[in-house]
Amino acid sequence: MVRFTLWAAHFQNLAGNFVGCFLGFVLCGLLFTSLVISWILMGYLVEKPLKIKETLNFDYTKGSPVAYVPITSCAAVGCGVRCMGKNLGSGIIPPFHDLQVTVSLTLPESDYNRNLGMFQVRTDFISIKGETLDSSSHPCMMRFKSLPIRLLLTLFKAVPLVTGFISEVQTLNVKLKDLNQGTETTTCLKVVLEQRPAHGPGAGIPNLYGASLVLESKLPFIKRIIWYWRKTLFIWVSIMSFVSELLFMSVCCRCVLVPATWKTTGSTGN
Image (cartoon, rainbow, N blue to C red; front, side, top):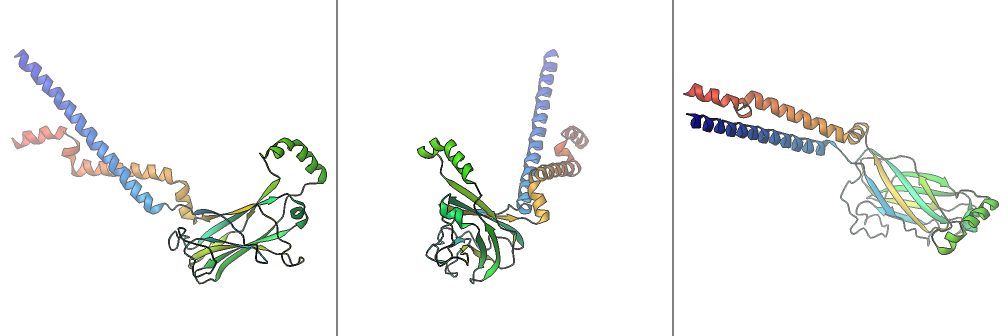
């Protein structure tokens, strides 16, 4: 009798462990399902802001140097830029989005650039038909430094300048006003260094070491909130999905979620 009681207690412990493992497996399955549902739902709701960064190669053979940044295939525009490998798909810029364009210009601190003064940078949004959808222009100039300041800076930076660790350059970040993307698809961007009217042909244009462009889109208000709070929304959607699944299992599949009812169901059947 004592041995039978010990065996009964042992099997009861095994049954309790099995029930605990089963409940843990069911709860882990519900948690995994809720995470998958939240991930799929957030994939439809969350929209990532567009950001494109390209190097500008200005054509100085023209009176006003021009550089093109292909967004999609722009063969019909006739910009002369090879767009192979840069075709990111039709309509990459969503409609009715505000766009921020930043043009970075690296200029040598030469006497010519310092004496040039103001110059104009213009950006045009070109459609697939070659039409200008929107345009923005902004004046800029090198930061002024008086002669004593330049001499002191040159004295302090003499060793790095001689060794080549730094260069006598200035980087100008020209932020153009928000441009609105309409219903028509933007094929490429056109950046122009406009020549000053007071100068002759080929003059009034700054000398550049290099240039680049950053295009960033601004999401609409609702989508912007979802983007900023995407992690919090993901957690809350997962929690709500898990609670909903748990309530559904408690109401419709109580015998699976609560194994204590197995004994009652079995005794009723007997």
